[in-house]
Image (cartoon, rainbow, N blue to C red):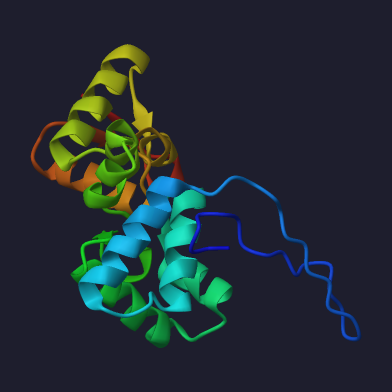
Length: 187
């Protein structure tokens, strides 16, 4: 089912004594299938199930972390990282960020092959210069910005927002007012 771009089977209604599988009927995603077949032809081998699960989840949820994949694959994060790196090397997915906040999206190659060019740009997000400009525009219109507002505006984690605001503050672009969680940033 995953190979044809259909939803994964749902086992959520299973219990200790019974396995219940729900298979949702939907049309095959022919562009996704074509991409899988092309990759299998290039490597002269079938796409591993772990890779199919990763690609399928990214098709549905757009951006996920290693720990989120570990739950789906029922494997350790170390094993999942190896599968993710193989997909990065093959050009099918792209990593974003570092450390525990590192996330993955489908690559531009995948989005292009399925005709979804603008969807790629939306998923990858904004580069740091665009983020800075959005923050400055927000401050200009709202008077100040908080860390949580920055995270939501730029579609980044709270920790990434803190780093970005600190960097902008250190360069003199903005100035913090207050301390701790009550800190706001102004021009």
